[in-house]
Image 1 (cartoon, rainbow, N blue to C red):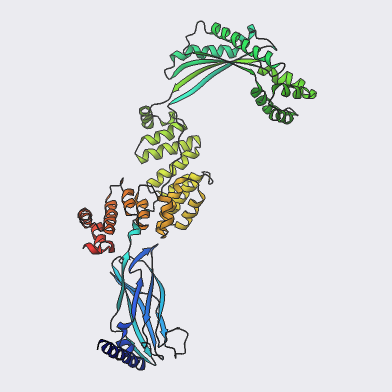
Image 2: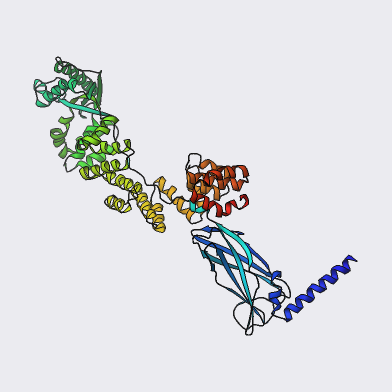
Length: 549
């Protein structure tokens, strides 16, 4: 009995479809029988574009062989509507060049795109149709809604870019050294009287004598380092170097008998001074210096080196006269610590006497203030007074913080365009100007880690969510949260916002809660969001909260 009933129903339906096939106007009557679907069902805005793929499935017997069907997708939104290009379909006996739908039925997919405009956050996509037969046009009596939209959560992406400061080299304690040499005769460790009365020694004594009165400098000790020139037997030179150290110690004690010195006296013997020899030869204008330096690089044995260099008879005499005598010495090195300006002193100088600060002090002082105008003044002084490349770069960063893009462009114009930090900051400038493709080119060229973070922002803008995650994973800011969110990592998205407290952060947290299905948390956050009119208006239209209104 049931089988007979089903058979009768099937015959009836088939009969109806045959009638539709024989009467093209009935394609309007049975328009509900067209299966209509859309991907995605909730439209999403990516890079200010809405991409849609809709599918139409026609049953057997629906499409009249001599009729045409026009389907027009229309996005209806607050403030208006916009139509995508019409899809034209034709029966199998129509002599035209559109997609053919046979009487037996078929399905077709069509890809369309809309440009996003304000108001489309609250919208829907509908299909409007019309059947054409000869000179007749019969419109579908209703439009068929196939999608809601549009999701604009990606628009929370922060596109201001992160510029990078160049570091200062300011030192709170600066290591200094005052040095003088005691020179010796060949193969001798005796300090000659004239060595202790030369002007360099007197200057050294005066330096030590005046140190206690210098409030910023402290004598931390003295090194005595003795050498022998690299000629003759190694054992002899080792002993000679040691004896020179001892005689230099006695000389130092004599020189400082009436001078107050502080810190330990450190005694060192270096033996043959091959390093000093190489340095002096490198700086000389000897004709065979490249050959000498090659010998030094080829042989490490001192005896072999000495022999090979002596074999260069033409140049050895010059070495004996010009180079080797400079290596027969003991160095007296007074080590000093200079206490630089304190933070408080620098803050005072910033307002009272900026000219007293050197380049490093100016760059460092700028990090001690939160006042951006003061930062600009300090960086400008460093750039103008010391021709500081770091000052110019950092000045550009300060201008960017003040949203003075043109001033930033002028400040960074003289910086090295190959420096990774500068390249990143040029990208930030282009980003601020809205030139996102140009900004991406700069970021791709920069090895600066921050450039990758900035690239991640552009990836989100352009819907490249997987690429964004590789650059932003582990970070804690809005863009990192969005990268996690769009990759389905809701817990990590929430964690990325853990250090953010602004209202837009609360909004995105509400989006995360909505996607998690946390109703009470959505309402809790929404109570705060609704206190801000602009956010309340957005939330009221946001498809993310459609289930919670």
